[in-house]
Length: 624
Ligand code: ADP
Image: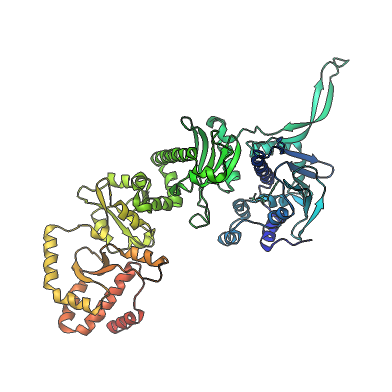
């Protein structure tokens, strides 16, 4: 007897003691595994003529023994496969997943985990797997009665494939496991969850029929016999007409195929006929997978040719910025005999990819126009990909992607597109304005935005590191510049003249402050851009304060990037009078004020205090 790996044990334990409400999905999981195994052998059969092709999945119920059996003639598993696939939960990120999901209910946990083979333990006391792998002589048996462990031994099995025997648990007050021995129930479940599986799912059914032509016409005769019946329609969902498929079926299909626990946010049927002909069924997931924004994530669509699965994840079918899309593509024109590597270069594949990109673009535009809420949800989950798409390759896709962008608006308090922003822009407003920070709450408190808000200007809040880079790459939208709100021209001509004059008059004071800050800022100015706050920091030149944060958080050999900073002092704030007074009476204290004001401006920007000791000592001396 071998022990399950710790991680597997935990999942198994969850299954065995499960109070999961949807136990019946074990049948979908096992059929799905069987179908995958047949897909693999079918692919081999294209080049190996010896593989027989009456592929099917067979279900048998033995009421007396309380055993349900699911059998396939797919690729099978050898000893090692049984060990690695069933003795271990192979899924990467399992541990991380568990950590992230503490506090979730069991239904959510099991559902999200994509229960797979272990779901059999929700309904069975003992699971026995007989399997013979393609190309091997010996068959093996895997037996397990739960967390104690499992055993793998040699066994006899004539044909290649896998048979899974479930010894069902005894009925309890709340759970009637014996219902999975009912032919009627099994038929219904297969229809519900696995109708589109492309191989026949057969079951020996007891059929009772009236036999006509008996001797006594008034006394009808009945005959009962066992017949192998196909339970599923076998038509792949994407081959059906849209109107034939219910939303539930579409959702089930998505969840099963892509191991998601949530219904998709949006789905797209696409039947393209022309120079290139293909069917596609595309989905936008409701939530980004936990590894979506990591290197581990692999984008791609399932690629079929005439119903044969060629590639589980064909990444060339999707550009990175639409990498969140999931789905299947079935193209009958693809040449099956070429290797997968060559397929990547295939002209037809490129044509499909181009056509798909157009289709996705059209659908997203339509969604944005007709159902903005759903589009916003999509953007909240996957918008970063689109933003990276705008920025990537020096913006060579920016014109194509700019209309998919959304940013949080100060006035609407939700995501808006640039087009919407433009449509509501004030007449006197020169540009599209944004402000950057760590969170919407923090941006809303930035000193720079107060005056623009008073003027009724809408400000876009940039909280993702890439946002300002996107703005820089775009530079403008429909002829309107995209600028930081700090650069907004909010003053009248008279005001501007006045502040220029004041800066001139107080040049010595401002120079003194600049000197006492010892190179921390490159300029100190009096400004009319502020309202309640005494000071703020502004950047000058190519690199903004937010970009400084982002760039320094990236690995870059320890070299620090520094934005050129300007300390703006609110000319209309009491502090200015105080500074003027100190300049004439107490320069020593003035330099302490300079330190405190500078550090406060940093805090307001979401930067940390640069010199804590200096700051604390200065504050200490000022307040005594
Ligand atoms: P998943 O299907 O999500 O990978 P499972 O726990 O259901 O997770 O299965 C683990 C692995 O075991 C599968 O990836 C597959 O390689 C193998 N497997 C399961 N069932 C079968 C089967 N009927 N025939 C061949 N291989 C199988």
